[in-house]
Image (tube, rainbow, N blue to C red):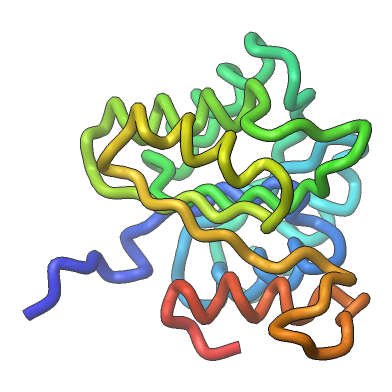
Length: 181
């Protein structure tokens, strides 16, 4: 018998969850029965429409907008997600590392702290990149959480041609969670 909880009992927070691979991941996680927080860092219109479409199908997904570098805003979003959907079990951070996004932003730290306080095993899924060591260092403080590194859109995977659609990114997240893409 497995200790793995049923997907329908889990809550996932998908950062950049309304566009590109994040949209695919949000839809598929919701369709698999997870409660999904679709988090955007810019406009929330896309997330709102996506969540409305999913609700019409009887699925649970709610939109949230956050400034990932503002600790108070991050705490607010994590609190709202926890109140609305339950404790976050899976963090899928699909923001690219560039001049805008830094590893383990205030939002990432707020989610990690919330997951660790609950004391249960959780998963953190982030785009593979230069921040690997940083995430490993941050997660060393939370031994109940595991780290999965996923390929970034446009990155070649195992020598294959780069997939610019983000499909391989979404597929990696789904496969790591045991969901067939």
